[in-house]
Image (cartoon, rainbow over all chains, first blue to last red; front, side):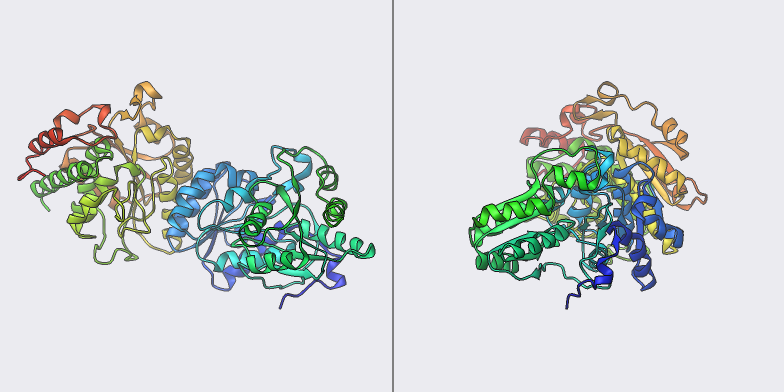
Length: 319
Length: 276
């Protein structure tokens, strides 16, 4: 059973990245042969926590993401479950060929877990706001792609990464976000979760968009629109039955992600719909553009990613 | 094997390299022939501890072909060592074969990791050395790079990392044949004196004639048994296309197969009996 956050938990704001280092410590203490490699961002990614606890199992590659990824590949070849860090923009983009040609092509137990994805890295600006990572990872054969909504889901995703054979991508952010799931929630690869049932429209979302989708659903309910909210935390493999089943029931979908509209969840959902049950869709996502400096909240508003935007999209598609 | 046997083995490997590429109609003969002696020394000269009947034996030394396009040389070494039948060498690059154009570890026993994208093998080897050390093993990790490959920046990221992490069990061998696909390494982008570069990065460096079997066995054997914290680099000076006269030092033979007439000349050069 999926456990949702208690009111007390909902009041706690925590970044998904905070789950990384501490979950690796737990996994190691449970006997999983975890190792971690970072690229001079161990403080930011929280992998440094794991490194402080188990210095012989942590490797700082310095500012060298390509080497980071292939060192992790070598560590995996020696029988370890190897996690990599860095920011999403470098940890996927700079190391793409290493992920594609070594990690994925060899089918290695490397868990690509960078943080600071999306616009959550705010003031750092467009160079650091990675909005194409889900697309880059999803297109590689054999890579499992997880986009957790909150701290509890991130812990679950990191555990899933450790126990799922082969490469897994876990997308984490920097922004403190309220808890949606309860502490200790267990999620499954290949599953989507219906967080709220509805009849007029299906809002498919993941990551920080889950919180926005739930707020939007509350407001829509006040206006008489019944929205079903589905957490597609596992973008690949996609839970086609749950997602297409929901959209078939409601007749339309608004797909939301803190990512480019190209190649990520929006693409995955529409590919599934086109094949199984064509239906009208609308997208709350970055419209083929780079980010810019600003606060997380400002950027969510400017780029039309917050609950206001979702409400508008739902109204249009249900009109 | 004694020296004569090792040289004969290397020659058999060369014959199989040329045969398999000729049969496939494509492949990379130049860089496969330049490293045939190095691979013979590693696999048959008592350098690598390995067991062809148990390819995943935990205590084995590891070999990574960073220059993955020399796959025909690796396949010849593995087949002659007994990882799979030598007859399979003639399936190189064909539909349904385990002998892919570049090595695929998910298909072929004895291939530690899939390679082909240059610049990555040394990082993988460094990570593997670190990983084996965590487990308390004293296995050695050998990686074979091309000199053109050393134009990849990641090689130097790995060189810095391995020295910093005191990867004394790591041995990088550079097959320095002076040529790359677009011409002389010196003309494309001069890599400079690789021995000095690796030494400056904190490596223990030796240079060797990459076709002198006695030297190769001595130097590689010494790297295997050496103690200390410094990773080892062996710059092997080689001739691209070595053993086939018309291919030697000719960049044109980086990546093409011989036609029937050329194949006959090649077999004659290598003293092969019975031709194709």
